[in-house]
Image (tube, rainbow, N blue to C red; front, side, top):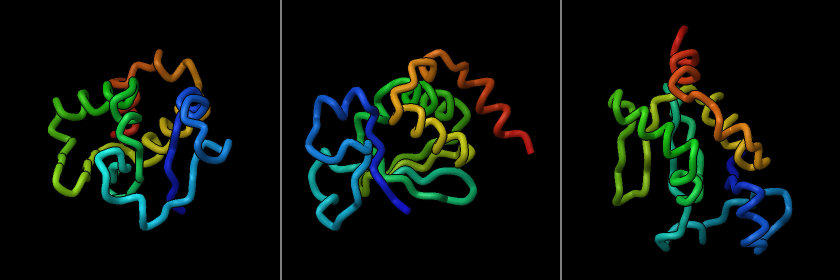
Length: 120
Protein backbone atom coordinates (compact mmCIF):
# COMPACT_ATOMS: atom_id res chain seq x y z
CA UNK A 1 0.00 0.00 0.00
CA UNK A 2 1.49 3.35 -1.04
CA UNK A 3 0.96 6.52 0.92
CA UNK A 4 2.49 9.93 1.45
CA UNK A 5 4.14 10.53 4.81
CA UNK A 6 3.97 13.92 6.51
CA UNK A 7 5.33 14.78 9.96
CA UNK A 8 2.69 15.82 12.47
CA UNK A 9 4.20 19.27 13.01
CA UNK A 10 4.03 20.07 9.30
CA UNK A 11 0.61 18.50 8.97
CA UNK A 12 -0.73 20.96 11.51
CA UNK A 13 0.56 23.81 9.33
CA UNK A 14 -0.79 22.42 6.07
CA UNK A 15 -4.01 20.93 7.46
CA UNK A 16 -5.34 20.45 3.92
CA UNK A 17 -6.11 16.75 4.24
CA UNK A 18 -6.95 14.13 6.81
CA UNK A 19 -5.53 14.07 10.34
CA UNK A 20 -4.05 10.61 9.81
CA UNK A 21 -0.73 11.98 8.51
CA UNK A 22 -1.07 10.54 5.04
CA UNK A 23 -3.34 10.68 2.07
CA UNK A 24 -4.26 8.30 -0.70
CA UNK A 25 -2.28 8.59 -3.91
CA UNK A 26 -3.94 9.75 -7.10
CA UNK A 27 -2.93 10.32 -10.71
CA UNK A 28 -2.94 14.06 -10.02
CA UNK A 29 0.03 13.63 -7.65
CA UNK A 30 2.48 13.97 -10.55
CA UNK A 31 3.30 17.21 -12.33
CA UNK A 32 4.32 20.20 -10.19
CA UNK A 33 7.67 20.68 -8.46
CA UNK A 34 5.93 20.27 -5.07
CA UNK A 35 4.88 16.78 -6.06
CA UNK A 36 6.21 13.84 -4.11
CA UNK A 37 9.57 12.34 -4.93
CA UNK A 38 9.79 8.62 -5.62
CA UNK A 39 12.34 7.08 -3.28
CA UNK A 40 13.42 3.57 -4.29
CA UNK A 41 14.87 1.86 -1.22
CA UNK A 42 17.12 -1.15 -0.69
CA UNK A 43 17.75 -4.36 -2.55
CA UNK A 44 14.01 -4.98 -2.68
CA UNK A 45 13.61 -1.70 -4.62
CA UNK A 46 10.56 -0.76 -2.58
CA UNK A 47 9.08 2.55 -3.70
CA UNK A 48 7.95 5.32 -1.37
CA UNK A 49 6.35 8.58 -2.44
CA UNK A 50 7.71 11.21 -0.08
CA UNK A 51 7.08 14.94 0.06
CA UNK A 52 10.30 16.77 -0.97
CA UNK A 53 10.50 18.74 2.29
CA UNK A 54 10.67 15.47 4.26
CA UNK A 55 13.91 14.54 2.47
CA UNK A 56 15.33 17.96 3.34
CA UNK A 57 14.59 17.56 7.05
CA UNK A 58 16.88 15.89 9.56
CA UNK A 59 17.45 12.97 9.92
CA UNK A 60 16.72 12.20 6.24
CA UNK A 61 19.16 14.89 5.09
CA UNK A 62 21.83 13.36 7.34
CA UNK A 63 21.00 9.84 6.14
CA UNK A 64 21.24 10.82 2.48
CA UNK A 65 24.52 12.69 3.09
CA UNK A 66 25.96 9.62 4.86
CA UNK A 67 24.89 7.36 2.02
CA UNK A 68 26.33 9.77 -0.58
CA UNK A 69 29.73 9.33 1.05
CA UNK A 70 29.41 5.57 0.48
CA UNK A 71 28.03 6.05 -3.09
CA UNK A 72 24.72 4.53 -2.01
CA UNK A 73 22.46 7.33 -3.32
CA UNK A 74 21.59 8.02 -6.95
CA UNK A 75 19.35 10.83 -8.24
CA UNK A 76 17.44 10.97 -11.49
CA UNK A 77 16.21 14.57 -11.38
CA UNK A 78 14.10 14.52 -14.56
CA UNK A 79 11.95 11.71 -13.19
CA UNK A 80 12.16 12.91 -9.56
CA UNK A 81 13.50 9.55 -8.41
CA UNK A 82 16.03 8.92 -5.64
CA UNK A 83 17.64 5.50 -5.24
CA UNK A 84 18.74 4.86 -1.66
CA UNK A 85 20.69 1.71 -0.80
CA UNK A 86 19.61 1.27 2.80
CA UNK A 87 17.47 -1.31 4.55
CA UNK A 88 13.77 -0.88 3.74
CA UNK A 89 12.73 -1.46 7.36
CA UNK A 90 15.06 1.30 8.55
CA UNK A 91 13.74 3.79 5.98
CA UNK A 92 10.12 2.91 6.69
CA UNK A 93 10.69 3.17 10.44
CA UNK A 94 12.26 6.61 10.01
CA UNK A 95 9.22 7.73 8.01
CA UNK A 96 6.94 6.39 10.73
CA UNK A 97 8.91 8.20 13.45
CA UNK A 98 8.80 11.45 11.50
CA UNK A 99 5.10 11.09 10.80
CA UNK A 100 4.48 10.65 14.52
CA UNK A 101 6.72 13.61 15.38
CA UNK A 102 9.11 11.62 17.59
CA UNK A 103 11.65 14.12 18.90
CA UNK A 104 14.30 11.47 19.65
CA UNK A 105 14.51 10.81 15.91
CA UNK A 106 16.83 13.82 15.68
CA UNK A 107 19.19 12.40 18.31
CA UNK A 108 19.93 9.12 16.52
CA UNK A 109 23.46 8.21 15.47
CA UNK A 110 22.57 7.34 11.89
CA UNK A 111 26.03 6.02 10.98
CA UNK A 112 25.79 3.30 13.65
CA UNK A 113 22.22 2.46 12.68
CA UNK A 114 23.03 2.22 8.94
CA UNK A 115 26.04 0.02 9.73
CA UNK A 116 23.89 -2.21 11.95
CA UNK A 117 21.21 -2.65 9.26
CA UNK A 118 23.89 -3.30 6.62
CA UNK A 119 25.05 -6.43 8.47
CA UNK A 120 23.57 -9.67 7.22
